[in-house]
Amino acid sequence: MNAATFHACLRLMRLHRPIGALLLLWPTLWALWLAADGAPDFSLLAIFIAGVWVMRAAGCVINDYADRGIDAHVRRTRDRPLARGEVTPRQALLLFVLLLAPALALALQLNREAQLLALPALAVAALYPFAKRVTHLPQLALGVAFSWGIPMAYAAQLAAVPAEAWWLFAANFAWVVAYDTQYAMADREDDLRIGVKSSAIFFGGYDNRAVALLHLLCLALLAAIGARRGLDAPFYAALIFALGCAAYQQFLCRNRDREKCLRAFLNNNWFGAAVFCGLALALW
Image 1 (cartoon, rainbow, N blue to C red):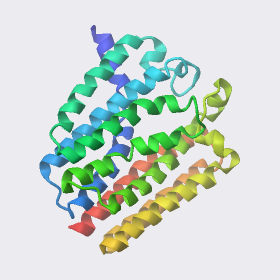
Image 2 (image 1 turned 120 degrees about the vertical axis):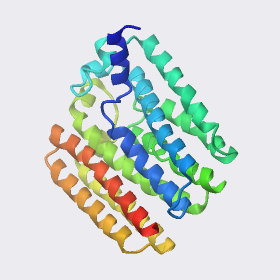
Image 3 (image 1 turned 60 degrees about the horizontal axis):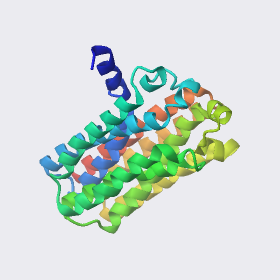
Image 4 (image 1 turned 90 degrees about the horizontal axis):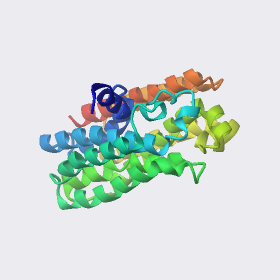
């Protein structure tokens, strides 16, 4: 492999764009902090942080492999390495397999309960990129993929998955569908032209209202978890801040401008970070 191909592979893994890893990381940290009452095991924390980055990289590679015939026709993605021919499909598949090795090594450090949950996580991550061919709601598959770290974190910390984990899963699922709909709104014109399905197309003119309802559902479920756990003021202050982020995103997306929809999507990093900070302070 020459230097140009090596750098193209780094770009294929999106190491230069960490937003996806951060959006996967925040709910995993929510789960670890709640499961451990604010004091997660350091080794588990290291394993899950590393796992997030490895699995996100693998997910980007298999996504671009699946979309190699589409990305060249979409303004936002036409400069990706596979679309430009900087990496061959065979090299991309090899890279995906190579990334699964450290992912497996990390999973083997977890208890049996968490290991069993790792298997469907891998399946969903591999199948998600192909969902847009068969359904207008591929964001539902992404919601599952980006929420599966939650029951895994509870299982790793408690050797069980309590009901709270599934409520948190539902909250994060709603959030993922919300922000990935905003992401899809930026590509809607291109997707309609080439026949790719998305929730932005499915919701049509109701897209912003759907996103608002999903954000509110996420926050309501998080508030219910906080009330059940007796969390105090810092957590609810964080939820108010997150609500402000959601309102700001609605403002950005009001005219469905491509660049502003992408800015709204990126703003969700602050939403997730705020919830984590509120949880950490409330459980301290």
